[in-house]
Structures are given as structure tokens and as C-alpha cells.
Length: 85
Image 1 (cartoon, one colour):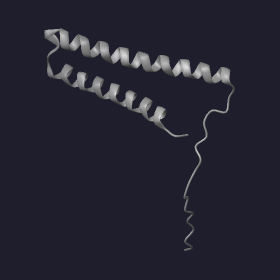
Image 2 (cartoon, helix red, strand yellow; image 1 turned 135 degrees about the horizontal axis):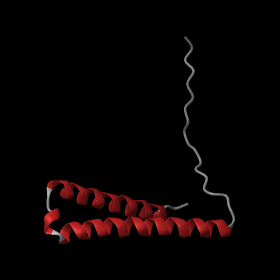
Image 3 (cartoon, helix red, strand yellow; image 1 turned 90 degrees about the horizontal axis):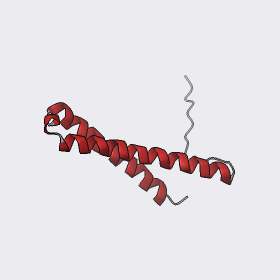
Image 4 (cartoon, helix red, strand yellow; image 1 turned 60 degrees about the vertical axis):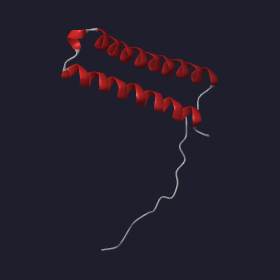
């Protein structure tokens, strides 16, 4: 059996090749989604911390899931801002 393997050493990641109007629309859309993500998870954390009846294990894990979601969203935004392309 022949050994047929190709080794890829690099690849080029291309962005959206659209005009400035579409870039502004996409920027606004993604900024809105980011804001809703932070706001929704912040509301979950606020309600869980303020309401004593929600201090149960299920809501404890839900609050940690909200913290992880906020962390992932912020990490992605920070990486895109600091990326040197």
C-alpha cells in the first residue's frame, strides 16, 4: 500500500471581503450580540446572588456557567482586538 500523505505547513485565514457598509453592519450586529450576552448573563448572576431561594446547587452551577460564558465572550473579543492582522 502506497504512503500518500500531504503535509500542510501553513494556511491563510481570509476575512469578509465586503465593502465598508457591510463591515459596519456586521460590526454593529456582533457588538449587539456581545452586549446581549453580557447583559443576559449579568442578569442571571444578579438574580441568583440577590434571591436567597436561588442559593441551591442547581443555581450555583448555573451561575458558574454564566461566568464561563462571560469569560469566553470577553476572551474572544480581547483576542480579536489584539490580533496583529
